[in-house]
Image (cartoon, rainbow, N blue to C red):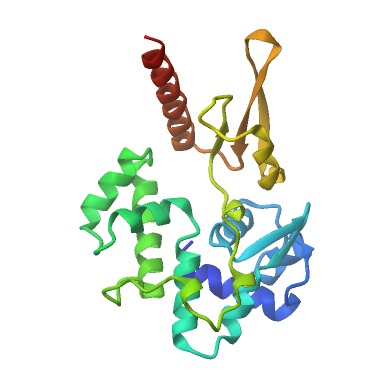
Length: 239
């Protein structure tokens, strides 16, 4: 879902509930679905969460994020644009593409090829590219040569409205290694959105894989590649 569509739905929810938590079925109702028990509703809600428009205060409940309220009532266009760019950068894929192509996007064919190399099937790459470009245009990301989009540089927007980095969901792998932080960091992630899969190691030790929901074939390939890379580094160091 493009950012403009997701934000439009988030504002509809805000107009009904403000920042109060509501059951997932009620949220689905507000954005045009009879309940959350269908793929379209779940996909729409997931998209809104990826952009940071919805928070999950507790299991079975969702609430509009404070940033949506800030956007709704921001008195100046510059503030609204900064928040739009913040929303745009919430999905990890979008953030990576924007960082890679800081001076402007390449051709559609080039971007589609990159998505396919990342594990997207061609049809998914095409639809993802369309949503990405529409979201970029809507936010006005490349309208300024400097790509103004740093929310912290705008004094009028309170710092309390800026999401913490750990609130951005991404595929996570926890592997016991001196290079990584202690396993206790897992508690900063919304674990309700992950399946924790134990992996038995030698000496009675265990590692945990945190698998997000939904989990796609492209995610599986990327996770496997990351583990293979860690194993290759360990073998190289040992030799």
